[in-house]
Length: 184
Ligand code: AMP
Image (cartoon, rainbow, N blue to C red; front, side):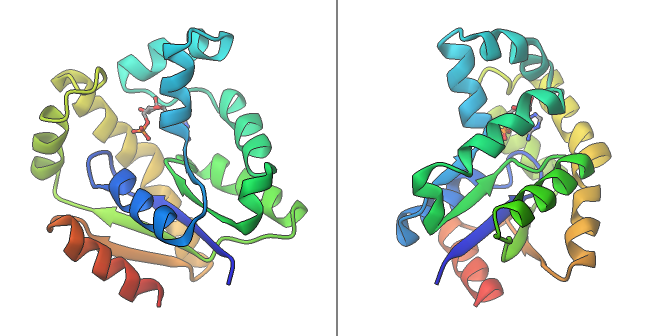
């Protein structure tokens, strides 16, 4: 069966870790917009240069820089067998765009999984991860941006009866089990 999942949830909740586990298990691509953007900044591509200051400030990068990227990525050959989106959609406009794009491609997402954990746990994890947007002021801003712009995306999937909320404040293998159960 073709599997298509969206990982929502705040930074530090374990989306990347869990998305990778499932992508490996199902042999489908793990599409992380954060990873794609970080690679672009590392390679100093035109896109990378445009997004750098947004990322280091903990802000979302403008939608017009992300939407084409997702449109192209979901049309690559490997994405025909399914996909796991990690870090997209990040606001309601992106979620609406994705619905339209998937309709065009005759696809739909099976579930949106919101992995959640209390703020103090997230801050603690992020500060120990050592990525360059993990400085304390940036971490706080990313959590605030999550609350303001990304948390409302949950209601979007709730309305479509596709939201699963999973407690990410547990050991990774316990979380993996809970996700498997939620989407069984
Ligand atoms: P992440 O690795 O998902 O935490 O993303 C790291 C950073 O990349 C975010 O703080 C944003 O600046 C940017 N980013 C990643 N995905 C998106 C997206 N879908 N929309 C806007 N900005 C994004």
